[in-house]
Each structure stands twice: as structure tokens, then as C-alpha cells.
Length: 313
Image (cartoon, rainbow, N blue to C red; front, side, top):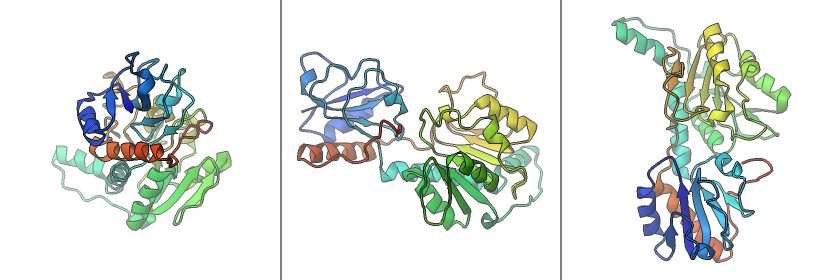
């Protein structure tokens, strides 16, 4: 019984230490070796190198280290085995913390007060109540539903958009192209938590931004993207900010990561940038769940949280 751990973009040392601790009966390798390839029955990956998953005849399933699986589905050599996406209370909680933080910061005039502090200005600003503001969430999966639940507890009005019809308690839901237009016209703050698929790539573009509310209790519409960088057209976001179509943006994800040093997003006064840190994967929280699924699957239980390849998530 062998697990292949294949990841790029970060130091895997702590992940490997914890994986070997929580899976003491399994061997852990970080690359195909030839002689041991037939023994690999599970793979845990994040932006794996090319051909990393080829030549594994005993592979039963692939586990993604992050909530998104677009990095996997782009792999031309992806084996035809089940893919398991991460669903964990820790990851969901971290994303909800980020969304609530950014929504409240925009609600309570955080940007303006930071500017005033730098100028030593003592001036109270008008701040609407949460109940006067509609937060629209694009994507009502595990992450979107939990964020909606917590924002609802704070008193915000809630709207949600999905590709196909979905009902969520306390949320006015919309779907499809026509529903997106109505959703944008209703939402004061738009939170993007969609998966990146062929259908959603570049969805936050000039046409999308032009349909956002022009007048809101905050003074203008606000965009928060904690989903995937490929969902947004950054030049269109900058143009909307400069034209006043968009009042403020909090962006955690970008088309190119790390965000290039020459990107105008860094210095734009109405953009809040974070380095894809909204929901950092914690190996102590995620790896035991993955190994437990492997053990249960080996006993004959079905895998949970499987990716629908045709849908892209």
C-alpha cells in the first residue's frame, strides 16, 4: 500500500511528515520510481508535475490538496480514476472567516478609515446596517453555503447564483444567464466562490461588471473574489474601478500567481490584495480525513466528495 504525494508551489516537508505519521501502514513516495509504481494505490496532489500520474496501474483514486480541482483536470495525462475534492470543516471555516472579514471591512468603511488614519483625520463616516446590504454569493457549494449562513446570522440580506437551480434556506437564489443579470442587479457586495470550469472562466468581465448595481447603501458595488483567478478579467476590473462602475474590490486570487510585481492591482487605492490566503490548507486537518477515506475505501466503502469531470468540480 503506497501513497504518491506529488505537489509543486510549496515545500512539502511538513505535509510528508504528517502524512507518514497518520498513515504508518502505508509507504509514502514523492515521485514514480519504476519498481514501486504498481504498489501506488492512492495519489495526493497539487499542481503535480507533467506525467506524474502516468504508469500507476494500481491507482484507485486521486485526492486534491485544495478545494479546486482545475489544476488536475487540465492534466492531459490524467488517469481515469475517481478524483476526491477536499471537503473539511477547517477549510470551510477558514474561507468563511475570510469572506466575513472582507464583507465587514467593506461595510464598515475600512479602506476610508485606513486612509484617514494615514492623514490623522478624525471624521466619522456613514455606515449602513448589515440588514440594509445584500451580499450576493456566486457559488453555493460547501463554501458558499457556510459563508451565507454566517453572513445571515449577522443580519445581511442574501442572494445566491448557481449554474443550475438550487434552493438554500435564507438565500434568494438565481441561476442561468438571465438569473445572473437579476442577481447582479440585486447584490451590493458580490462574493465569488465559483469553481473554475470552461463555463465560468473569465465570468467576471466587463459585461458582468457593467450589470452590477450602480447605487448601493455602501456608495457603490463591491467585488470579493476568493474563488479562482481564472474567473476574473483583471484589466476589466481595473477599468471598472477607474470608471466608477466598481467601488472597491478584495482579491485573493489572480490569473498569474504570485501576482506580478508590475501589476497595477498592487497599488490601486481601492483594491485589497491577499496572496491566495483565504483558505490555506492545513495538513493536520486535511490529511487524516484523506487517509480515513482511503482506509474506508479499502474496506469496501464508497468514496465521498467525488468530482464530476463533466461539470468540472
